[in-house]
Length: 229
Image (tube, rainbow, N blue to C red; front, side):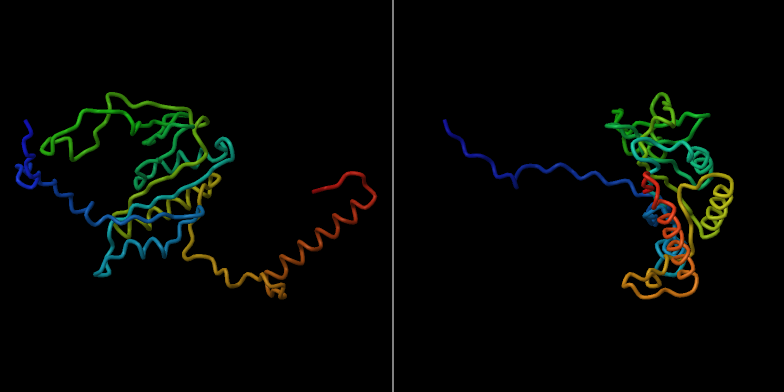
């Protein structure tokens, strides 16, 4: 026997559970992505500036590609030094068809968490919700085996922390092959000449030297069967 279907709007609706309020630092957190391997101080400060002109905590992400098919191990000392900075919150990367969150290193191995590892959910009132929900053990992988595409993360809660971060990066770069650069402002691309006009100053000297080098190489290769590319 056919029975009419009840109106969905008349069915009892489940009570909405209140969402836990984020801590104050997370509510004010800003995010800035430094592209092309360049951290521009003026851009980071602009991203961290609040409506009142004060500094807001900023998460700085620096995506990088450190090699073609595999990571260039010449960058390994710099990566380890950056992971040791107090502002560093880790690195995201992985291997082919695998994504990892790297949280540190031990020797030549990176310590990581697998974000795809399924774990039991926690109730909103559980005390562990306020912190990271770690697995039973931290895994490791050889640094040389990870994919060259990765991204470093840094959190600067105050302007002085950001200044300290820039100073630490300068110290790291002085003793290792740096993975990214830091500048006060973006380069002035308007100074570059693409129309064939004669450049002036230092640009002209650089171009003249390059032209002389090409001319000298051409003369050296005139009577040689080997062509230098």
